[in-house]
Length: 55
Image 1 (cartoon, rainbow, N blue to C red):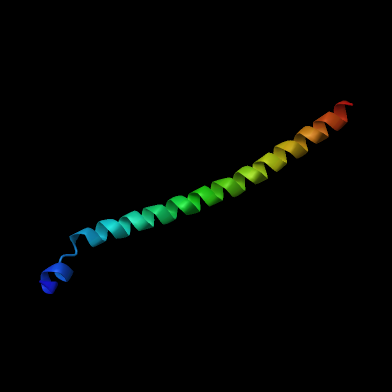
Image 2: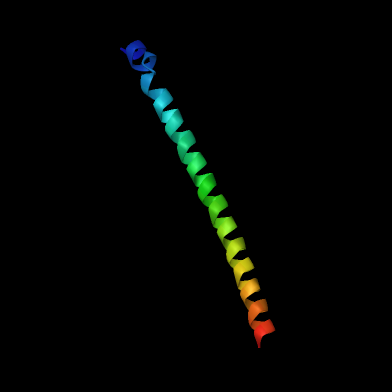
């Protein structure tokens, strides 16, 4: 019985691929969040300079 239980590894690969995909998604979300913050700061700085030049 144990041999049959531990010998079946068909679902293990699917689970591993799912975990890798989840890790890649978390890394992508973190990178996008960081890039979004930097982009927002850049836009705010540019808007402040344009406002100061026009005033």
